[in-house]
Image 1 (tube, rainbow, N blue to C red):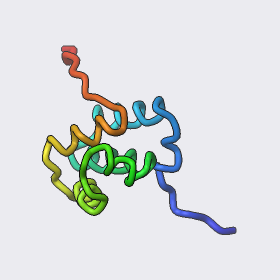
Image 2: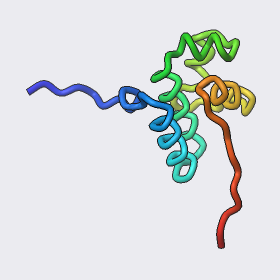
Image 3: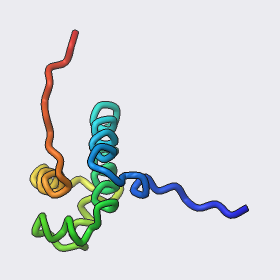
Length: 94
């Protein structure tokens, strides 16, 4: 039996799946996990396409979204916009 490495990007094949994945990570993850998740989404959509839409180079995009990276908030916002997402704030319940 041959197995392959699991890659979440293979399953992010619709806007709904992307939104659900990112919302779960935003609710449950830390800053590193959020950056990693945005990187998975960018990979699923295509780094070349995201690079074109953000005005960033592909190498810069890979570096900004790599594990352990600390991208600027403006970079995160550019990538979220390019993947068709946005951040919404809702009050926490007691």
